[in-house]
Structure formats: C-alpha cells, structure tokens
Length: 143
Length: 433
Image 1 (cartoon, each protein chain N blue to C red):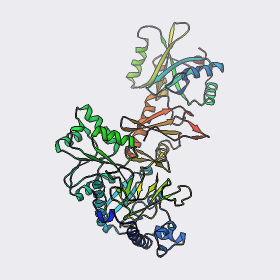
Image 2 (image 1 turned 45 degrees about the vertical axis):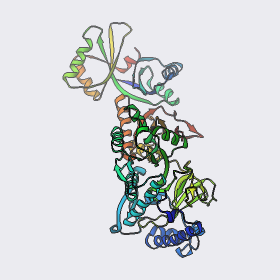
Image 3 (image 1 turned 90 degrees about the vertical axis):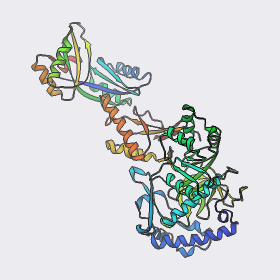
Image 4 (image 1 turned 120 degrees about the horizontal axis):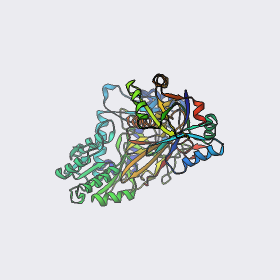
C-alpha cells in the first residue's frame, strides 16, 4: 500500500533541476509524479519514479543528497468535491497531512494524490475503512 | 597629553632597569605559586634566578590560550580568591571561556592604563566619556569605565545597543569622547544620518576605538563622518583588557605599548624564535606587574611589528603597528572572538557527525555579517521543508548562545563548499581592513 518517494536537496540556483532530470533521463528512469517545495535558499524535489533504487544510486553518485520516504497514493475521482471528501475523513480522525501533491491519470478519469503522513499506517487503515482506494506501489510506479 | 609623565617617557636604560626588576619578580612569583608554571620552568630546565637580563626572557616558556582553558577557571591565578576582586571572561570553544582575575591593585593598574590611553587621545578630566563598549564579562566596558573615572572625566556607562538612544544621549549630554568598536562608531553615524542628526554638530571631539581589526581607511571615514580624532587602542583580556597599547593623537602612527607593565616580543609563529625590531611576526606579552594572573610570554596570535624610538608626543615606549592578521584562524566578528572549530563543535553536537561547513564574513555598511554554510548530508536531510528550516534556526540559536554572535545559516548541497587540495576552505573573510 505504501509508495516509495525519493527526495533531493537542491540549492536555489539555476540549472540544478535540469541536472537532476537529465541524470534520470540518461539512466532510463521515468518520472511518474513530482513536486518541488522551496524556500528562498533551497528546495526539496520529491519524485516518484519507476525505479527508486536506481534513481537514488545515480543521484548519490553525482553528489546529491537523496532521501527515501514512504508516502501513499490515493485514487480520487476527478470530480468536484473529490479531494474535500478525503480530507474531511482525515480531519475527523485528527490526521495531519505533512504535504501532498496531485497528478491526473492518463485515462483522465481519476486523479492520484500523493500524501505524506507522520503516522502512515494509521492513515492507510482509516482511508481503507472509508472505502478510499489506496494504490499499491507497483501500480503507481507503472502508471 | 601624557597621564604618567615619569613612566611613559622614561629613558630606555631606566625603563629596561625597571622591566628587569619586575620580570625577575614575576618569574619568581609564578614559579612559586602556579604549578603550571613550575612544571613548565622545570621542563625547560630554568629557574627564576636564571633571569639575569631582559634578554633572558627568550629562554622562558610560552603560554598559549589553551593553557588558560586547561586550567579553567582559576588554575593559573597566583593568589587565593580572597585576594581576587574581579573576574572577567572571553568566549571560548564550546562555551568554555578564558577566565581572567584581578586583585584590587590590578584594577588600579588597569584604570591607570586606560587613563593613559584616554589622555593619549587628548582626553582630560573636563571630558564627558560616552562608553559604548559592552559592560559585563567582556573587559571593554568596565575597563574603559574605571579608566575614565581615574582620569577624572565624567563617564556615561552606555554599554552597547539601542543606537538611537545612544545618539540622543550623546547629543543631550554633550559627550566629548566616544569609546566603542570602530564598526559601531560607523554604524552610529549611519543611524544618526537616518534620524537626521548631524554628528559634526555634536560636541564629540575624539574617540578611542579597539577590540577588532580596522584599517587606516576606516579611521579616515570615522574621522570624516563623526568629525573627531579616531585613535586605535589595543588590548586583550588575558594580558589585562584594553589598555595594553594606544596610539597618541599627535601622530596616530603605531600604538605605544605600556612597556613598564608588559614586555612585548615579536616571534616567528612557526619556530618561536624572537625576531628583531621591524620584522613582522606574532606578538607575545609578558605581564610583569599584574598580581592575580601574570602570564609569561603569552602568545597573542596577533601579527604585527615593533618600532622603537622616541615619538614626537614624547613617549619613549616602543610602538606596534596596527594588527595586520592572525597566526591562527580566529575571526573577530563585531568584537567577538570566533574560531571555526567552535562552529564545528556546535554542528557536531547537533547530529553527532561533522558536516562540511564554511564561514563567510562580510561587512554590510559598517557591521560584520556572518554567514555559515552547512552542507546537507543524509543525516541532516529531511523531505519536509519545515524540518530543514528548524535545523537552520537551531544552528543559528546555538551559535548565538554559545558564541554570542548573530549568524545566518544557509544549507547547501554536498560538495558545494570550495575545497582546496581536498581540504574544505573553512573561512572566507570578505572584509577589507
């Protein structure tokens, strides 16, 4: 049920993001989802790729600081109120979202939202109890 | 103006006779009362009685800052605490300070030396001395204070901070002499301009500036902006505090060392060999009259040279050049001593590992700015922005608490800090002195 996400520390200077994506591209790694959080000095690039271990290895070899985090991917119907419904379930159970980002599946029918929680196991339990589809990692890597 | 005409203008032979007598006395005192010195003398195979001339000083062992730390806090004092009336301290590695003590007589001596210093800048008992050196453990504030009182001047014990209020008081009280760090003097000028106060219309006529390195260019700037004579003063807490040496307002060309109390030497910092007058090297002091904490051949790490000769002001005391650098990696930031190793200790404390870091010192306007770059390794890294920001704030807070300086911490990518021959470049000082 959990999805592996890699995060990369980037200084706020031009060309860094391009370098990461080029390294991954040259190594035949496909990016499935990504988000970039930034401050005035630095940013954190979060990626879900089709080959986490290989991506980590390539980036580390090129002196990037790389972390691995477990997140979950939730399928949300691409309709008004879809996300609000999920967040409402989490709010009622007092589960805090550390961060999240979304992308739309190729079919265009559903959206996929990546969530990062402090207590990931409890979040999965509550979401599944409420009939929310939590996607297995394998499915997300090959989306 | 010469405060102690007799001793500040002693002919050299008479001065050297005084020095020798006092040197013999101090060698005996430390040997008998301080185990550290007894061991050092014994190791070197020297007895206090072997000091037969000033030249024999070169055979005595050196004292370094680490010796004070190793004997923290009072281990090098020659007298019991009942004879100590004052304690000061300067910041040191991981919060361990360098501690110095004074007897009543030491405090009197110190006051006289500052009175000499203020007189050399042209001050008299008719002056109002605005003392913006920090009061507290730092020797600047209280040192200047007692000396100004000894001179008979009126002292305003301002201490640092609250610059607008300082300017208002200076204006309202008619301060004539300013005592602070040179960078703070320039900062005051900037603030005064902002609030529409014209320094040149104030009664201020001279300033004694020290506790950090500064240049002649900076002197000219201070003199122009504040319309005063700016005099360079020198001292360090281990030796006594401010009051070790001062320029005279007549020449402003080299600082007269009060040699009747401190014998200076210039050594080659690598070999420890004494260098002749005129050659640049590390400044070393032997305190010959201090009671509580006399130091034998204390290595200041300051680089300068000595020039003998009678000055046009009448003083026969040897002059030292402005300090041109350090023989170690110590930085002076806003008057606070900072060693890169202290930052290293703080970082080590935080994650139990030593990340690569770099200190970048700049001068913005007239204030020193310290930026600390820290390479983010996997131990420090988090995928959450706020955790990294908390880390930055925590390092900043620790630096402020332990070293007493404000720093901006910037997290950077691994291997982004310049390395030279594989070794990280720890310090980049962009200030121009």
